[in-house]
Amino acid sequence: MTCCYDTVVFDLDGTLIESHEGIFRSLMYALGEMGCASPGEQDMRRFIGPPLQRSFVDVLGMSEEDARRATEIYRSRYKDKCLEESAVYTGIPELLARLKRCGAVLAVATGKPQGMTDKILQHFRLAEYFSCIVGTDEKTVTNDKSRLIERVLAGREGRTVMIGDTRFDRQGAKDCGIAFVGAGYGYGTPEELGADEGVPVAADVNGLLALLLEDAPVPRGVFITVEGLDGCGKTTQMNALEQALKRFGYDVLRTREPGGCPVSEKIRDIVLDRGHPEMLPMTEALLYASARAQHVGQIILPALKKGRLVLCDRYVDSSIAYQGGGRMLGMDRVADINAYATGGLLPDISVYLDAGVSAALERRFGVGGADRIEMEPSEFHTRVSDAFEKLIQNQSSRYLVVDARADAESVTRECFKKVMDKLRVMEGVSSFG
Image (tube, rainbow, N blue to C red; front, side, top):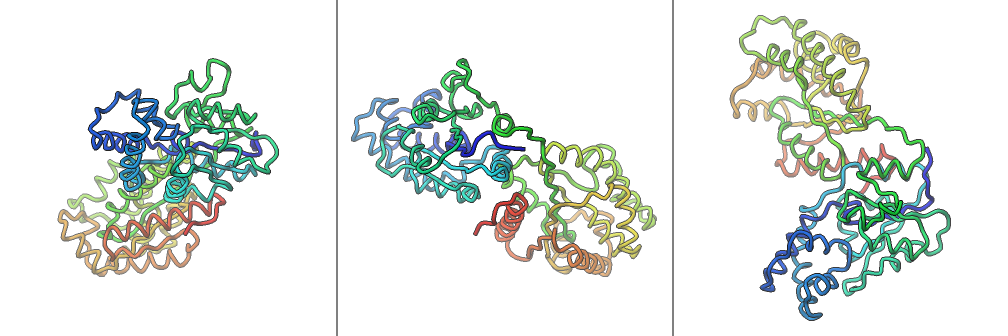
């Protein structure tokens, strides 16, 4: 696998970052403060790409003085809201990681102010991919993209390409004598990107990857599981982790065990049903393994083969802890059963939410509606906790332990940071902060 270019220069908005929500809301806010009517969507989209102050003049016909004032109002809101109202395009982290592994030099050239550019790229953990990041100063009103590209190219040689979504990106690449590839998933039209003139335009990030990399097979995706005692806060943290990973550009498939597909969901209903107190421990273990075999074959493996990130609520480790430890069937025995059921598939990353036995049980029973497993006595859950501790000691390279006794927001921050650090290491990029 080789990159078609030595240096790849990216625009920001509409190419790396899906930013229209924050831009549009800040634009409407500024116009409201100025007492101006909001433009139609087509005119709103014209604000993405060129310098903001110039767009107030060119698109809305403002005077230079009013345009400066509108720009100040816009930025006062945007700087506070841009991060929560933006997201990374799905697939961008994987694209950047693969380009770097091929030896390409990556850079950013954007008309967005330098400070805001740095803030956005650092927040979304993308800054670490780039050797050079070039934005504008706060007073820039020109839309000359070529000057920004020239700053990136200073002293560099070899094949270079500009990736962007507007005519300004295309013209800047032409003026600098470098290749151009249109980000057709962004905010420009295929016509302005030159699709009808033979300019390559990618419909999505996967299409962009195919244009930049030769012989680029789809890499295996990442398998992440979240484990812990009942009541540790898994549902809350699964929700937060799923949303954050998607905003940071990962193609996430969320699933659960037991369950995740129709056959496995039917087994879930049986194994957790409080009406089956007579169920033998080995029956329980085999039912879990059967549900897992179907889940892995039908859902998890196909998603990983497509390069997706699979986020699963519980997996093999739960069986080893609950049936091997809690039911005292033996951890090795249950591990062997599940190795056969899954073909030996283990997670790349396992997050363990450590809440402690007493705190976890107190939380779980406070919710009500406990299932057959959750109704077991505290001694059972203590054995489960001990089994998880042994698993973590023996599988420390894939386990990320998070203190789940803190408030939910603190747990979310720690969980996401540890997962992102691990992902970046796996992608060959040094961890951030």
